[in-house]
Length: 250
Image 1 (cartoon, rainbow, N blue to C red):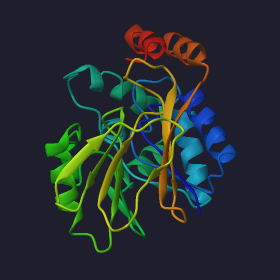
Image 2 (cartoon, rainbow, N blue to C red):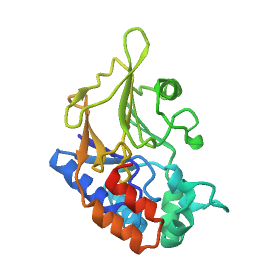
Image 3 (cartoon, rainbow, N blue to C red):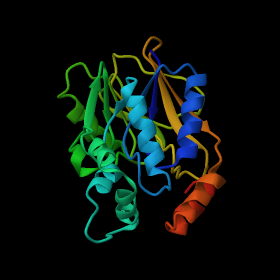
Image 4 (cartoon, helix red, strand yellow):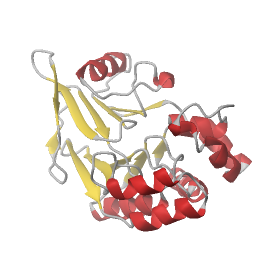
């Protein structure tokens, strides 16, 4: 059963719907939402409603740091990342906030372990952005029986790490649309990128598709109407910066 892995949607319904449609065209039969459903974007209600519907149909979902902040906004705006938390909290219904609050920090699905940030203290929201951080996350994943693949987000980029025969951790940059073999005899960690807030200079949305029969992971980029997403942010009165960055992909 092909599993679409989507992370860091960030209340961007235009990007989310485009990725869902693309994933279905690629044969996705199940979905996994890897956290940060909300934050930054103008459509938290629509995105959470969509996720709730997907979960009711069997999708997997975990919590991200922005989901946590939307449930309990910080008393003071400490940084750019927390600047939309109070607004998002006010938009969501009590039941939607309860849904976000009960999402787990990690979730095992067969040989897969889903986590928003690092398995090494998932509640600390550490970024897996280099070999050292990936090694710590994979080491922590060893506590989960039979896990061979760790999939997450949080860093808003698509990357892969694996351990070869010498146990040395290696990193490489995947090519969108090209399937990567991920056999079970090795340990793998992938960050699947951001659906709603790409930050690599390319505005196209990101997600990945895992094929457990072929043991392959394919990263995808999807064009979407980022101008409409930006316009929605401006209409909502959110910081213009979050609208402008969608066109830049940074």
